[in-house]
Length: 143
Image 1: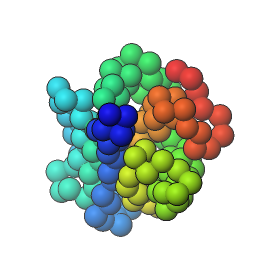
Image 2: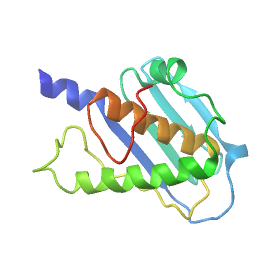
Image 3: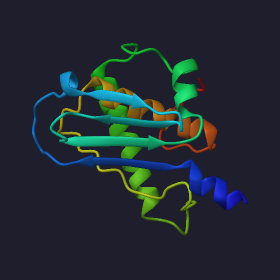
Image 4: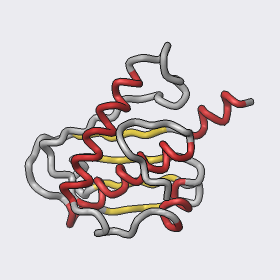
């Protein structure tokens, strides 16, 4: 039963289909569905972020820092550190729970994903670390 919960809890995917350097903030659309899925994509589908985690949408609305609390460069730097450690853990299923770290994240720090994408990735990483008692890198706010 515990394994079923873990399997249903974490599915986190980023697909970066373009190496373009343009900022895509204006093209971002965010959809929050009833089943607690957060999806962000732009019209030309240069990238897509899908977060499926029971409780994340509620946590984001009630406990996350508001948008523009952190600068874009802060979010990009933290995301690069968190995603690097996440991907290291995906490659070590004998050491880290493979039910938590199922898929690697294709996050390229040279691509300008824009504020909204970085904001949601950062907040998911904070949510994940606090919810599952994981520490990916450095200080983790307990919000």
